[in-house]
Amino acid sequence: VQLVESGGGSVQSGGSLRLSCAASGYTYSNYYMGWFRQPPGKEREGVAAIVSKGTTFYVESVKGRFTISQDSAKNTLYLQMNSLKPEDTAKYYCAATSNAYYSSDYYRRFGLREWQYNYWGQGTQVTVSS
Image (cartoon, rainbow, N blue to C red):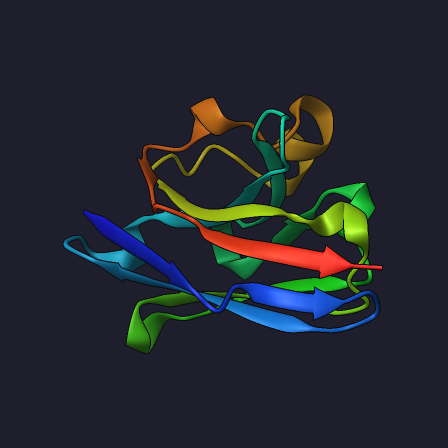
């Protein structure tokens, strides 16, 4: 399994970026995908996920600004990030899980956590300046 992120960079506050995650080495449709981020000096945290039937989940801090999507034909996951803020500065990771049990309701109750995901990319840096 290989996950490769791209699209990171430096932008000013209010700007936009689109991250991509190219997946290979497994049957993409058998897995569910998510985005996480690790701000400087902090632990990795969940950002957004796609669960069964294409339903999406977002943490509160990015709702209305970020959009997770995927192109299954290209085995690629995306994260469109708009209205970026300095606090969005982090290394962003895509991840895959084979567990179909996780739903939006589950994430709302228990959170979007690292341990729920089996495979990880190496990350791409996003820096937002004020």
